[in-house]
Image 1 (cartoon, rainbow, N blue to C red):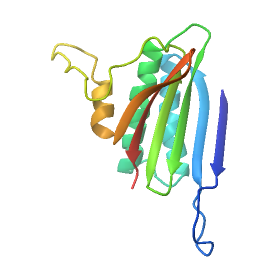
Image 2 (cartoon, rainbow, N blue to C red; image 1 turned 90 degrees about the vertical axis):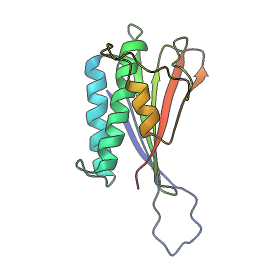
Image 3 (tube, rainbow, N blue to C red; image 1 turned 180 degrees about the vertical axis):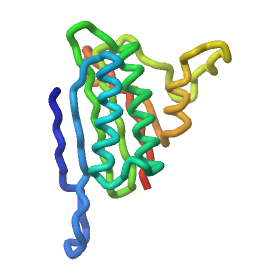
Image 4 (cartoon, rainbow, N blue to C red; image 1 turned 90 degrees about the horizontal axis):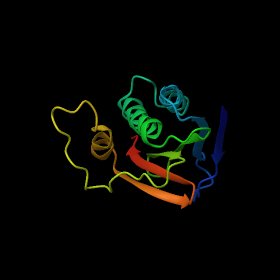
Length: 158
């Protein structure tokens, strides 16, 4: 398990005010149900460290979003011997959190935002991206290289 936690300096116009940096947390986890559970727990801990305690609405919502995206990565993005990457980026200037899950299956992309079909009432699954769409302010998919895809969402923390 490799984790990287890094503050970076955001543009700051008033040098007399304290600097609130953009914060990043990145970790690679196994593309398994255990890796998805660990992603959820680590996201909750990181948000708590950044000032959103476990029992806050912001922490619970962001943790649920991480859980849904990590579960999708474990179910649909699995390639034997390859990991998925969780990246959290906190943007202090607008109070948002960007959640990114990168998995090794670029050919298996989810539907685009706004085109998710409603699940059948008889289905036991198929509601994860509907939750992501309803709880986040934006979401989508990007492919940065021919070997991975990233499903991301943004949520207001404040």
